[in-house]
Image (tube, rainbow, N blue to C red; front, side, top):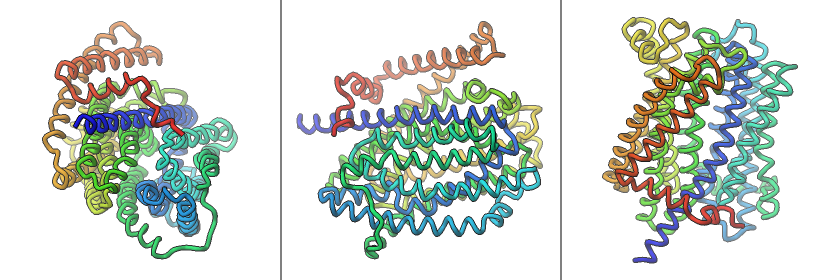
Length: 551
């Protein structure tokens, strides 16, 4: 029994170590993403030009998620685990998959290229006539190059993660953001918003190329081939199509929200995009890191028939998502204006842009917890070979998001009570363009319902409800105390620190956030939080990252 406990204990610490490595790299990537957004805000503000960039980006994202995800990490990793004992067979398998994928994504991109004028007019017609029609069409076509590159990178990334080279895997998005920043810094002054598009293509190439040397040394680099295996592709497709539909549905909802925002005031898409990107930072650091760290272990446990250990591993990761995500949400809601002003408040990004973006961020931040749970449970289901529950969850969430977007938009236009309530709640009374707030609200509510459905499905199949609910209740209570402490200290600091300058806002937010977190740690320690104890044990381990760095 003692040996079993030791193995399980080491498994938990390895999970946290891998998650912390991924979180550290994700934090670096997200810091660069914040630098990227600050540069965009400084150069363009919430403007029609930036609206065009975000709209074109949605099209290439949709192509990537609807085609490239057919052979993504979640689908390939369990298959790679099965074949990893025979490296030569694994390389041939990857070559067949990569070649078939490349042909499919090129075909999809070419179709989208020729139909771009119709796509732009049908989806983003609200942007036409604002002086950037040519740039919108050009950017839409230019960014269609990136799905093929990022798709190939995702195939290589599946192998890299199966080999447990988490740092290498996590560095790809870091270089991706560096490429975009290069486009903003070097090309945007000369070519405007189109220069940013060229930076996206550069970032996509860097995302791919960083993984090539490692796979070449391991003789796992895919090579072009016409020797396809139809039964093999059929197996991959049967696993992939539900996941692809799930991702596509989720992104379709974002496309619809962006298309609706295009009919709002100039800069509405930019405000929506900035807020979405800001909430993506903690999502990447928390939800994506824990789900990616847990996925290889979950796949191996399921393949080995260790169902109970599989459930324990998934619930452990879920509890730690509660531990990190709930306080993050509470702090972001309290410090939203400070965060937006410190990160984006420069150049053409004025105070009105700040207030609208902060309000959208507050609503978006609620979805951080929901999306983190969805990321983890979806990967847990894929590790077990189950694709229906994530698909049903995605259908439910995306459908509800779109329905609520139309419903809330109509209410906001026709009901003064609803408009005044929303504006007063988020403190944006008297501003123009507040109609944008209904879209993050629709997104967060859709995510919440999708999460509840997926969690219910998981508990019904594997159990563990009491442990999950007790962990959620504990950390939700601690988060309420954190937000109250943070808010009270923020009000006190406003008397002593300037609110008109960036450094003053930064130190207000920093001090209030640190004290709020300290209060939360004290509360959790007093209540003997199991998750806090596990985090302390992992951090105090003498060599916590040994298993991650090992060759």
